[in-house]
Each structure stands twice: as C-alpha cells, then as structure tokens.
Amino acid sequence: MDAFHHLIAWLQHLEALSNRPLTGDDFVFPAIASTGQLKFGEAMNRSGIEVLLDIVVERSGVLVGRSGKFTTHCFRRGGAQYRFMWDERKWSLKA
Image (tube, rainbow, N blue to C red; front, side, top):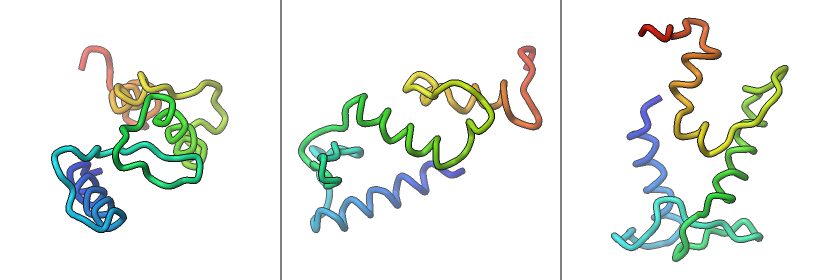
C-alpha cells in the first residue's frame, strides 16, 4: 500500500469537504462529532482513533477466528506485528 498516495488523496478530500485550501493550522485527522461531521478545528483524540480502528478491523475481517483486539499500540506497530504473526511469509526474529 502506498501510504503517501492515500495521504495526498485524503488531504484533497478534506479540502473538498471544507470548501477551502488546508492551512498549516488544520489537522490531518480532525475530530468527528457525534453527528458524523468533521470538526476541522479540533484534533481527533485517542478514543476517536480507537473507535475508527475498531470499525476498520471489524469490517476487514482480519480478526475473524482470532481472539483479541487491536489498540493504538498495535496500530503504530501493526506492520511489523502482522509480518511476525500472521503473514503467509512470516518474518523470523533473526530477520
């Protein structure tokens, strides 16, 4: 996955939603109100990120048949954790 490509696409989407160019004071991931609307002047907090992470993980099916839950710690370390634990071609600790 090309994270840079998707980040640029996300920023363009934010500009379209806000009907203005983004500035240096804008948050890349603004808070989300209970109505589902973005709150452009407020940063998303940890609980907001965890809620989104739960939604994405549930819809992806990545934990089907497994117990547990992803947390923000897993999110930061997710790529390496995936490669060590679940990828078809796992990394060894020696690697």
